[in-house]
Length: 418
Image (cartoon, rainbow, N blue to C red; front, side, top):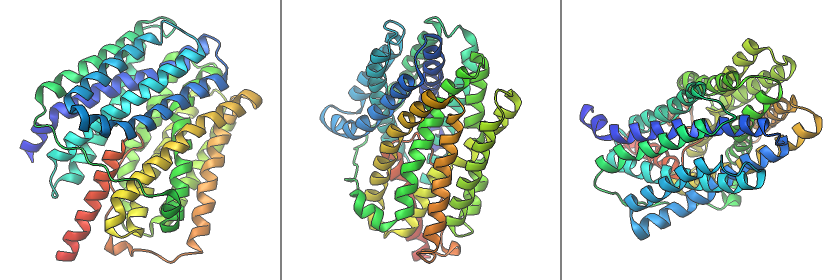
């Protein structure tokens, strides 16, 4: 195992630096946009543009890799992303930022697909779950660490955007110089959404609305913080707490979900998310209370991604899991595009507190739909027969989602053989 971790260390280090740069730009876009006087709806469009680009990149990257190879794709998209981060400071207009964020999202998805292909190729049936878990932790730590770097400069200048670009550029060194050989990239055709819905209505509906929640949290939290008068360091701390919550709560939530009907856990976590977000709408700019609510709301909503993936995997035959994983990633991406647009519109019309109201409403919808589905279908897989939860984070590409499904399939096969 030690040899394995030494082998994937360059990948993990590279991903950590990439997430430092990407995490910085997510917060910077909201803070700098507010400084420049962008409306909430304009910043919502900029946020959605990233997720639109990400969805396109996730679909296009395997095709590009098959044509020119991992190394060339990795180097090309890395260069474009680094340039895009700097270009954000050259033309500070909503339309330009929208275009650039599509490019950055496209490049980020391509980076994920390439890195996760290498990572999956390094893993075996016995350690795939552990490898993916460590990878997800490296991603989350990068996002959290990025918020601390925002104290290095002034968001009103180009310096922090340049730092983000440098971090992304540095990240490719350990990966490109150390990783070999280049693996094949195979992605199953996503399951049609209607078929996916028939197989798991709760999984399909839940993952769509979770996409809206995650994109709103990740993209519109800086806008919300700036609009209520928080300083840039305070906004960065708010973002750090939003991602620290799931880092610490993911494991206990997953442990519980492998021992009781998973729908109960989905119902409880989404219900708690609605309650925490409603509290957030009522506390104004009280920073200690906001930090606590960010920790708790992020801590119970982001693990829903892995919960819903595991629930769908429990409900479907093992041979359908790869295609279902692709369908779920697509569904999540569509929700991520629409979520910030809706949140930005209502924030523009009714005030910044609608950020929390929108999140609470969406969480409540998942809660009520989970309750409804529990009246329509018996337990699909008894809790004693499944331990298929794996802490996949919402920022993962379809490659990692499929790898998680593959791990579930391998676990099921080994249990049958035993």
